[in-house]
Image 1 (cartoon, rainbow, N blue to C red):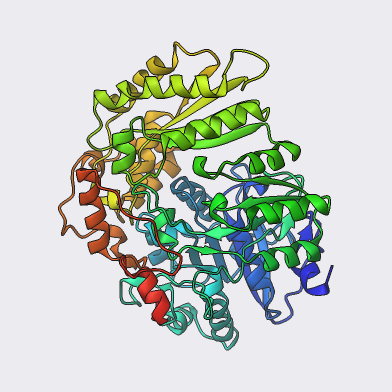
Image 2 (image 1 turned 120 degrees about the vertical axis):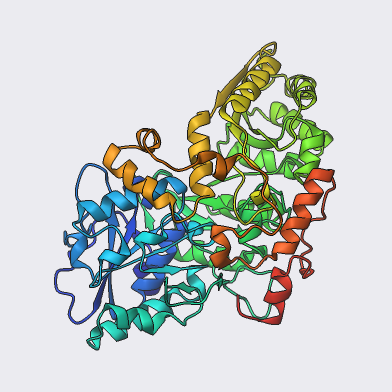
Length: 555
C-alpha cells in the first residue's frame, strides 16, 4: 500500500491521540449517529479524506451517540472546544440528534444565539434537497459534492480564523465561495457544486471510497467503492435521480488501481444503477481472480443475466433485491419506472435456477391518483413471479420472498414536490390491499413501514424554517411523536394539498441544477402517464443540468 493511500485508508479506530493542534485549525467532523452509521457513510468519509489531506487542519471524528455528550473520538476533546463543527446530514431524522448533540455539548442551539465560535455547519444530501428545517441551527451550509470545493471552503476558514478574525469575519470570508450558503450573507439560490471531469463529463473522476474498514461498521470489514453517481432513468419519485445529475460512471482502471493499492479482503460496490456500468462483469471477474470477496448494493431486473447471477452466486449471494416500485404497470409508467414485466419474470426465473434462496421486492404505495384497480393488478403479477421463481414450492426454486412496502414520500427537488402525501388511513388501506394480494401465495411475507413515521419523514422533508420549532419541541419531549401532540403547526398544510405551479418552496434557496420548468413538465407527465426517455450518455441539456455541466458553467 502506498504512503498516500495509507494516510487515506485507516483500518480500525485506533488513531493516536491528537492533543496538540500545533497551530492547525481544529475541525470536528460529526455524524448524527453511532460509529456503525459513520463508518458506512461514504459521503462523511469522503469529507474526512479531503480535509485530512490539508496538514493545516486538525480534523477529528465525532460520533453523536444518544447516551453521552459528544467528544472527539481521537483526542477526547468536547465538541464545544472546536472552532468549527461540521455535521453530515443524510436523513431527515438526523435533525433531532444534531440538535441533541449541540445541546449536550453546551452549544446554543440557534445560530442567532451564537455570536462567537464555534461555527456550526452542515453538508450532505439534505443540504441540497431541503435544508430549511435545520437551517436556523447552522451558521454555514456547504451545498454540493465535497470534491467540488469543500476543501477550499475549509482552508479559507482556516486562514481567516488563524489570522485572528472573529466569527462574523470568518463567515464573511467564505460567503462568496461556490456552494456556500451562509444565512444573511449569501444571495440565494445557491448553486449545488458538482465534481467535474473536464475531458469526459460522463466519467466519475474521483469515486468515493471507504476511509475506514472496521468490524464496527454496518457493512462489517467491507471496503466500499462508488461505481456510479446519479441515475439516468429519471424515476419521478427519486431525489437521487435529479440532485445527482449528470449521471457519471467510474473508470474500470481507476477502481482497479484503488483496489490494488488498498488490497481489501471484501469490496462493496455502491451505486444507483450498477448493472448499467458496462465494466461490471469484467470488474467482478477481476476481483474474483485476485481472491477478493465482493457484494453489490442493488441491481435492476433488466440487468440480471445468467452470467451475472453465476458470478454473484459463486460470491455467496443468497438474496436478490429488485424494485417493483408501484403495484401496477399504469403507476410504474406514470412514475417513469422502466420495468418490463418480461424482464422481471426472466430475472426471478434465473434467480430460481441459480439457487437464490430469497427474493426481496421494494414496493411503494400511496401514489397520487392511486386506485383500487392498481392493487387488482398486483395479485396476478405476484402470482406470475411466484410461478416463474417457484417460490416456496420445493427445493429447486426460491425458498421465500419478501415484499418491503413503503409509502411514497413526495420529495423536494423531484417532480413530486407539487404532490400531496397519502393520509395514514390511505396508507394503511394500501397495506391491507398488498397483504390481500400476497396472502394466497406460499412463501411470501409482507413488511411495511410505520405509516405515521413515514408521514413524519414527509413533514420534515417538505418543511420550512418553522419546522425547527418542532425539532426544539422534540428535543424537550424526547421524540417527534410526542412533540407533534403539542406543536401548533399545521401538518396538513405541508403534506395534504396539491401545490400550485408558482408556489415558492422553502428548498428554493438551493439550485440543484435541474430547472423548475423541467420538473413541472415531469409532474404533468406523471399525471398524464407519459414516460420520458432516460438520460443519454453524452447528456442532452433538456433538464438544464447536463447543458450547464458540459459548458462548464457554475453549478
